[in-house]
Length: 335
Image (tube, rainbow, N blue to C red):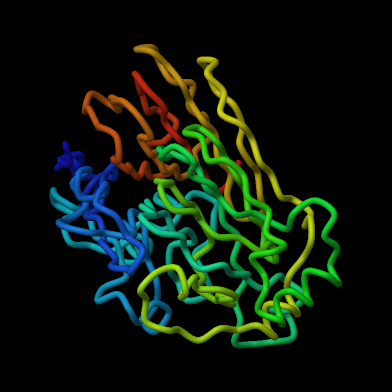
């Protein structure tokens, strides 16, 4: 994978900002598979590759260093927070960091060899009355899926909120889950409050707000040989929503070109499909994250294979030139 994207140009003593990649942060979970190792994200079984992460101390205690660091060049080793502190709006554009001063997105690749736990993230009303909770909204783009793989999203048809809450508190949530076939190219946006679980056999790109407030409902402990973990049935029942506003599921589209996937208060996403042509990237002077979902993307003359994630600072984003033979996911903070 090409990583030497940071130029040595200087302007007034500051190193010039250009697109860069960061070192992946591999995260071990019991449900992880081996496909991320094949994408150069580490060795052995890897559940999550944190491509873009900038979490404050204590937010992710299971990760040794939850901050992405530039992979090479004059800025090598700097975290995203340090780049924000040095470059401000030249890096972030008109977007704002978190209240702690960190980068406002968490971007991952997830390889589910087994089902992930069934869980709910708290919505804004719950967070407003519980100071320790943090809002979490996320999106999945399916990169690969084994035959028969599914994603669990929301409840099955005909299940109402009362029934969903009763199943959660009774420990019978599997009986009311909505299961949807997973197909490469599918997109799902999961607003806070939706009950969900990534199914075994799926490889997805995940974009989310940088929070880890999770209410675990079922950990499939009778299916997989896993250490028992705490469940949060009462909290999940209080925060679950049925058919929550903003939920989106889009089937894969084989048509070349660009299509909008989602626009939220926190980020937006666009899918680009090309067979060797130029990519119609957004032209606004705002920060962009580019994820190569399939094939190869050539950005400002540097080729990046499947699994690569490139950060384009706001200052240079409008001048990016990209060609693509495959699928590229463009993520922005501000339109």
